[in-house]
Image 1 (tube, rainbow, N blue to C red):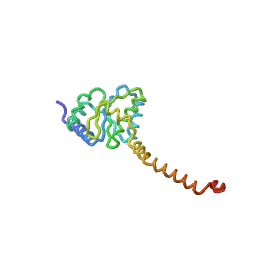
Image 2 (spheres, rainbow, N blue to C red):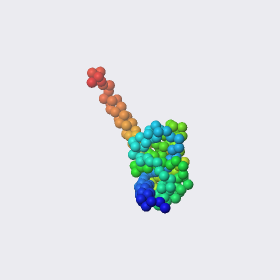
Image 3 (cartoon, rainbow, N blue to C red):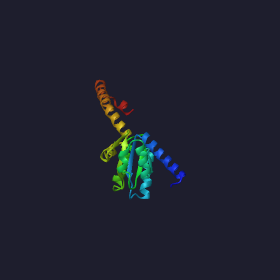
Image 4 (cartoon, helix red, strand yellow):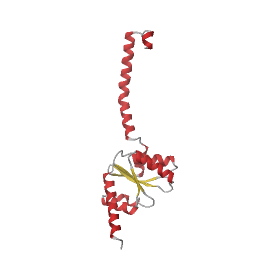
Amino acid sequence: MPNIKVLENKKAIVDALSEKLQNATSAVFVDYKGITVAQDTELRNKFREAGVDYTVVKNTLTRFAANKIGYSEFDEVLNGTTSLAVTTGDPIAPARIVCEFAKKNKNVLKIKGGLVEGKVMTIDQLKGFGELPSKDALIAQVLGTFLAPISSLAFVLDQIRQQKEGPAPAAEAEA
């Protein structure tokens, strides 16, 4: 029979994992087999920069944690080498970082499964999220599309003003 102290420690790990998964905007399970130490360090740095918590997890304890909060769909993917990338921020970040890293490093990483905003996602859906730009980049694109018509209008109005005023004298043009 296992030691009571060991069981309490495992129960605490399960509780922490359950809470982490429940509070996450996004979580991705990753198969990291074949990754080198240098690659792992680079990957961890990318996750850290994006505000993503990345840890290697024990499959059995993670399965207990997922089942505790109602995610029994992960039972079949929690085998072999498994790590977990979790964030409470940008929900696209974990999948995007894993996909970019896998492309750059000859598919060393493989997405096993995950969830976004509380919904279990398929591998293809997570890879689709991985192809999207970051949340900040998407916001910048939207703002850029809002600014384009305004900028064009300002340019046209300035051209009309210049036509009505006539050409500027050479001394004013240099100033």
